[in-house]
Image (cartoon, rainbow, N blue to C red; front, top):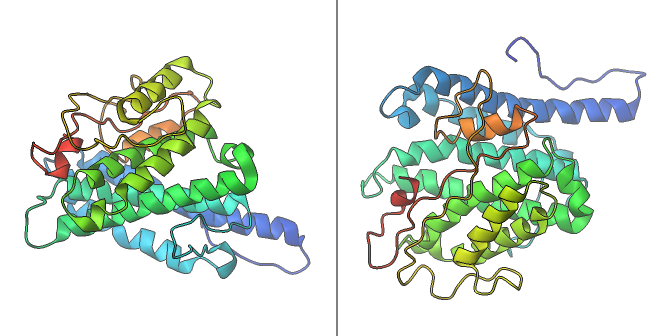
Length: 303
C-alpha cells in the first residue's frame, strides 16, 4: 500500500469518463489506506496495556481529517440541518463517505475506551462526541442511499450488505452508550437515531443469506423493539427498568489468515470482514447494558 502513489491526476486527450472513475477510486483508496495504516499500527502496539491512547495510534488522527478537507467539491456531501438524509449524486459517493465515517469511529473509539469519563480534561467526551456524530451521519448516509438507489445502492459497496450490517451494528453500540449517558449532548436524540438505524438493519436483514445472522438480528430486535411485528420503535421503558439481558449479535469470529481476529480491537474487526471473502460478520459485542439504577458510566457497555 505504501508503495502506491494515490494522487489524483489529469491528462489531455483521455476518456473523461474513465478519468472521472479513476479519480474517484483514488480517493476511495486513500481512505482505505488510512484504515490499513491504522491496522498496521495496531499490530505493533496491541500488546501494550493502553494501546488506544498510544502516541503511535493517536498520531493517525490528522490523516483522517485531511482526507475530508482535501475532497473536491463534487465528492463532498451537504447534510441538511434538520437531520434528514442528504441528497447524493451517486451511491458511490454515499458509500465513500460511509467508509470514511466508519473509519473515524474505528479510530476514536479505542481512544475514549482507554480514557476515564470522569476526568475533567474533557478528552473522553471529545472522542465520544466525534464517534457519535459519525454514527449519526453514517445513519443518514445509509438512509439516503436506500431512499435514492434502493438496496442495490447498499449492495454496490465493497463486501455488499456485509459492510452495511457491520456499520449498523457498530453504531448500535454507540447509540446505547448515548442512551445511557446522563449528558444531554449525547442522549438528546439517541432514541431517534437508535430507531432509525435499527430500521435500516431490518431492511437489510432479508439480503443476508445466512440464517444465523438473521436469528441474531431478530434477537436484537426482540430485546429492544416495542413490537417486533412492526417497524422498529424502541421500547418506551428503555433504558429504564431492569433489562437483565445480554446482547451478543455476533457469530464466532472466523480465523482469517494473517489477521488477529481474536482481538476485540475496533480496528481489526472491520478489517477482517472486508479483507476476506468469507461471509462472516464481526460486529462489536454489546455486553451487559447498564440500566438507570446502576452506574451511568457509558464505558461499561464496552467492557
